[in-house]
Image (tube, rainbow, N blue to C red; front, side, top):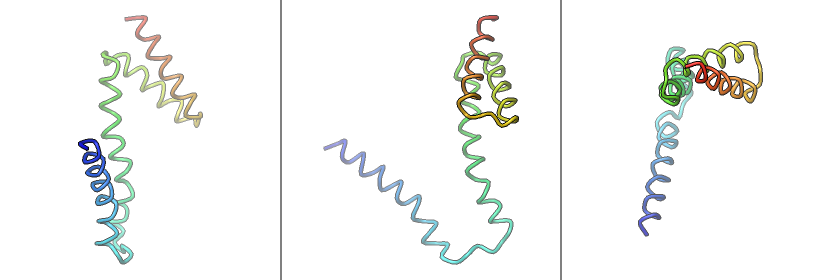
Length: 99
């Protein structure tokens, strides 16, 4: 029973988060500033959640920086996500061997 209450609370919370903008913003948003602000929110939130996780996941700032540098360089050149992730993991592993 307790699990069902938790699931219902999470469902309600998720629904409210998605429903509230539709309820308040029925008309098209005309302000360029507000539209651009809303456009970049997902990127800012993803970065705010991902960057700390990257640097605290390995236990060493040096290995995390090596993996991040490898990922950024390969992503800049347009490689597929699986190649970028594999190369970043390999860079972390190799940097860990040298420490």
